[in-house]
View 1 (tube, one colour):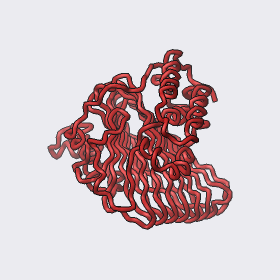
View 2 (cartoon, helix red, strand yellow):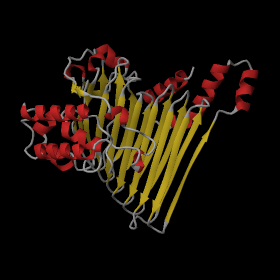
View 3 (tube, one colour):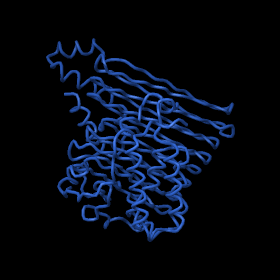
View 4 (cartoon, one colour):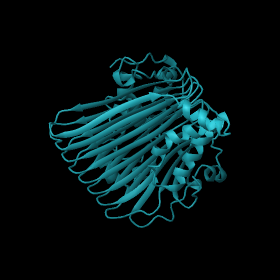
Length: 441
């Protein structure tokens, strides 16, 4: 792996912050196994550096804007309020939620008192003190920090984040909202949220993971979420990335699925100057399925990148994937999706689709759907499209008295509608419908 040319001052800042945290005893009450894991991860990050476009998975995205800047761990007191939380809670203040501000747990803004028995939602720092058995089994066991620089950096610094444990045979009736807010006091700062979601066998739940900003501050979010889906469990996981237009966001979700489980993912990315969303799932048990959908929208000079990998390890599994992109001005979209079928994964049924619409002559998208198949009894398809709004439809709408901007917005929404309609949670679906309509008006 060829590392990025990392600014010497930036690397020194990461190393200093790490050593300061270790010397000051931050996490001194953590399990004994975690400290060497942190040290190894930091050493791997120092060796790897940030990736460059010479690496295949980063061919269309340069990490240089992050590597060239110096980000320090945020120390400033957060200024977010309960009113801010309400404003970004999808109009559903009764949902259980865990709130983090500038990368740190905010208990005063969180609400977990109405969770049913059998569901545990706590901050990672607390879980490291109180639930070491669960964490030793799953934490760092799913996400790869050996070959992935951003995950290694997150592993070295992980302290706060959500730990969600849903007991076996439990069906959760309302979503759990994991809300990560960044306010103006985080300028020049970096946060490394680390989340762990464990759905035990035959459980069912919906998790919403949101990243939002209260201003236009420049900062860096480097998030990692590990997900374990047990036998027969059903987990819906929505990730909403609405960072500051000057922010940088790298978010990685890695999932391991067991027999007869179903993991449903939806990724919505509309914020940040540069964002990269990685969603990787391993179908490790027979009869399970993965449904990965997403919508990304870019304008101005935004760069928005989605990378997916669905790894079929066991037989008789299915996967469905639909991602749509809407790019305006000089924005740049990237979609790189891979379906990998192991020799043992006979009777795999996979379908992957990426559709994009360009709203300006200077907007562009690079799309690369891929199939890598080593089994002979499979049914797999993939495809991608890039186009513009239908000029005939635009003319028809304008001839019926609809203004040009509204006609454009309505056709843009119609393009996005079929993927938005895949969302089962009404408040989330309605919010994304509104945001899509408003984005290009």
